[in-house]
Amino acid sequence: MMGAGVQFFTWYVMPKHFITSIIITSAVVIAISYGFELFSLITKKGHHEILDAVAAIIGGVIGMAISLLSISIL
Image (cartoon, rainbow, N blue to C red; front, top):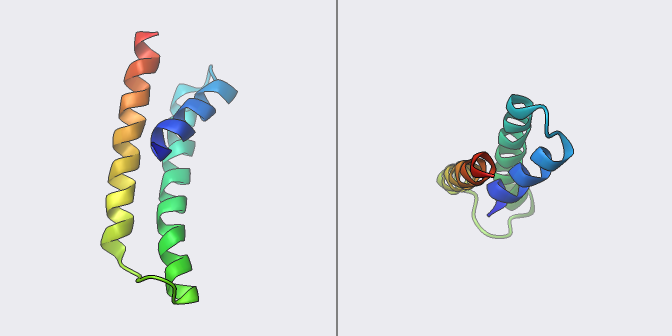
């Protein structure tokens, strides 16, 4: 859901810059996913595990793909 939401937002803000919106969305998804893990590491709330960040990034990419397919259909 995160990847799809960010992708739709960047596409709405920059409709003529398709590749740029994909790059920005990828960077945001990676930053948010790893940011939660860094927050867990710094505050000691929860557990810090890199595989959680990797799974969140994979889910974000899947969400991006779904939103890109729906954008291309429209």
